[in-house]
Image (cartoon, rainbow, N blue to C red; front, side):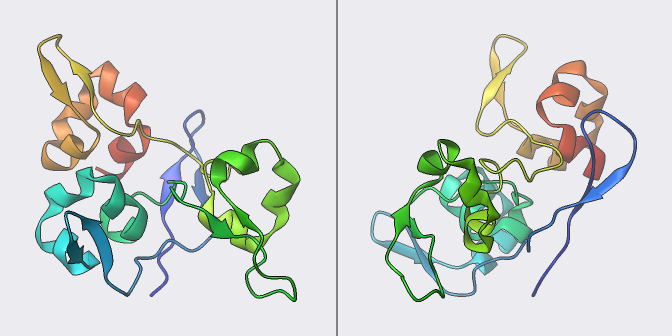
Length: 159
């Protein structure tokens, strides 16, 4: 299943489509503590989308298509010379590698392919309260607040 996500550009008022597929992995994956899940679990329990492992493996479900893959991957996938393992952090120093389709798929943030970027993880809200961009899904009215507009531009456009 291929889903194209539309999002306002952070500065401007036109729509831009992501140029790579945004999809969930179909197979099960390890979530830690010897637990194996699939994206169906995130669909029925949306709070799982707060966890990095679900954000990466369930990009369409968790609306996190602009997340770099956290582990090493083979940049030469499908070529005559497989086995060139790299991470997205390594790609940042070699932007020419972003011309490869595999690198675009695994490292959209590092390759600057994301039309807008939400703050990942938890941030301070009202000094005594921690929150995240995921909370906008539960309460879209938060987008009226300047802090959420700055930290969560993608979620605020989609809400």
